[in-house]
Image (tube, rainbow, N blue to C red):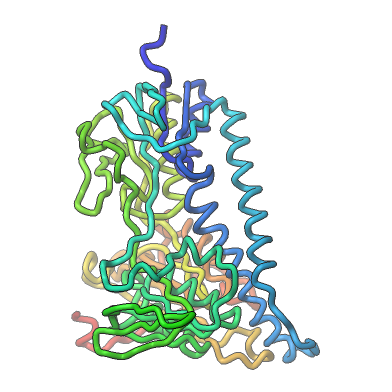
Length: 458
């Protein structure tokens, strides 16, 4: 008789937890997955997928505006927010059911309810005790807000996806990728947007040239970005709110959204009590095998607070299934992971920023191009694309590729393969470009960017 009820018990049915569980089940393991809310997790239900659908919706504003330059006469247009939200909800419902079907087809038992550890091999799920040889924590993260007067009035990205009506005016607090993506969504759909950021520029951690260029383009689109600004309090005022900054400025608005960070979902799970080490941010500390301080308890994805991207969680989860149940020991390689920001215009990046490359390699070459996309020559849109290569001056290896402009995520995905393979600038130069395309600029940049001596030394 088996010693435990399951070979693997996963807590959290998001993309990472589902990927690991269904693969383990396909290898013959006895697997259960616990979910407190709804199968699908952040990406499918509250993040990547619904947000990208709203981004698509907002981009039609550009298409209508640009059409005249290409000979089209577009009649007055109107936008129906409830219709978009209903279509979005239908799609995420479909995807959630697909996840459920995949788990069922792999023989994975789905257990509904909040899960908490009783001991290293026992989990209580809404009163039901289950034992497992291995436990996987895949509970993701949740929006976090600061403790300031009036914070109870704000919404997070969760609620922003389900608003009953489109706000005429919205204040978005935060300068990370979630904040800029929603700023682009609401701006594109017709809302007046004020974005308050603590730092001078958006997207801390991304390449400085890209960050600066995105701020310029967003401001040109009408987003009111206010740098070095922090909120002191938020007060209800009639049907709206008044946001007061620490410098005393007051902003009247219909809605306030906070996107200032997310915290790993580890509260009330009993992790520390059974010996699982957690850092100050609440993240589970794991080794290169995704194993926690308890050898049979693993963690993946946002709950480890490392590279918080859905494909990373999926790859980490699959590596655990391979290691434990397919006699194929596998580690997730966290180097050179491509990423995207679905801002308007979007960003794609892989590898090191110029600043990080300087710190790690000391001597680098930078190639950069800023140009008006071909489409904009007829549309009349002033928006410009930026492309950038960061190269190790000694070996010639391309250390980073960065882009701001239409199709940036699609283009960078392919370049991610090149960077992962250690391609050199010479090999980029030897590659024939596809003409006419924006992507060809990455293989035709020949002139190094000359930096002022002081900037290069910083």
